Length: 171
Image (tube, rainbow, N blue to C red; front, top):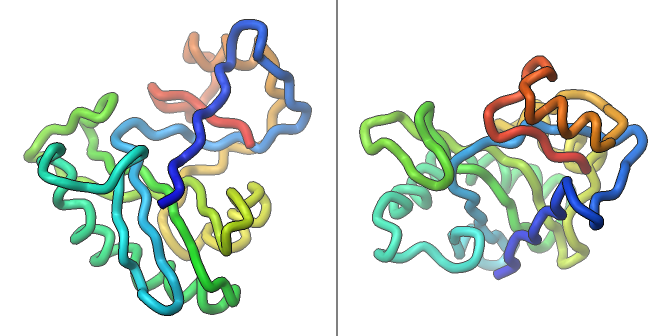
């Protein structure tokens, strides 16, 4: 199963500016993934770098929640797009989730933030928005911004309206 790639650091010498970057809310919880194929349906569910197993007891509820909320609409989208395979990446989170830690009593939800179809890599942001936005819960699109060190610093200082604790991701 495809692992989600690391997001480049927004600081240091590897920082790169992105003019007119599409900016999305970055949710804080546990990054999850599920794999679908036209032949097998939804057949794998995992965390960022492995399948779900008993070593993460708070995550064993994810496949059931996925089946109850995202499986059917995502399969419908995949079939409409004529994809043969789809891997979706989503955040498992609740109101008090932080850095992969969850409060057991909190209601949890799943929010889609990326997808890879037919082994062609991660969809571009425009294609992702067109395919999934308004059909399933997705990370909020916050608009476009010039992704500069100054913008990143404003996010860290809480000077950008509508940004959660975790921040933003540019695509």
